[in-house]
Length: 289
Image (cartoon, rainbow, N blue to C red):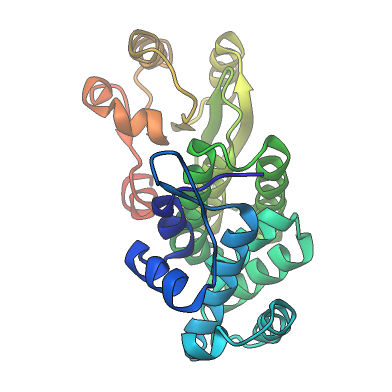
């Protein structure tokens, strides 16, 4: 069972810590344990309660009314909200799907977002904040590998499905090559870059995860791309990342290298002569031609 601090709940539910304390004291919605130093700790069940309460409250139901409802009544009311597209409770639903390994809820919520606003806006406005929130859960050690793989693979499947719907670019320009360095397996960002480039009609060649350096150089020589695109999330030594991209810039004969992800963003000052940073979704549109 996971243990959350009240600050974790604030980030995960979007409910201010002060409000959670008031709801706890006035309505008894949650009953946290307390450490020897009197710090509140909350469990998965209480996180689920607060996520459901946040959904109902967003729908216009007063907290005083919610507090009189039984758990089964709350669950029933939340299920009714799933068919109400006017209620924006997507992040709460995505987190509930993660906690409960609920594929149906996750896919239904994600598809409604994509139908309403398209994959690109869904990724930037909904999935990135969602992934940021579950990053908090990782730091708090409150989700396990099964849950992380479950959600990551569902998102991956959906992005690949959306890519497959796009027509192959007809341009005769040299392609842009997308790859992840060896030992880097987090490809959701790279797949999203692929989607945006393909959607713009730009030819691409997607090499994917954990590509050995020698194989990357061989592929560059064979394909002769006009640019390289990569992403790096896994923690690496500063000396390694500097050496890697300096060598790649040299051996690719000066090809533009575009890079995103936490490690690129964190080390951009020492990489600025080798890598063109992708920091925002808009950078893919404005920087990569």
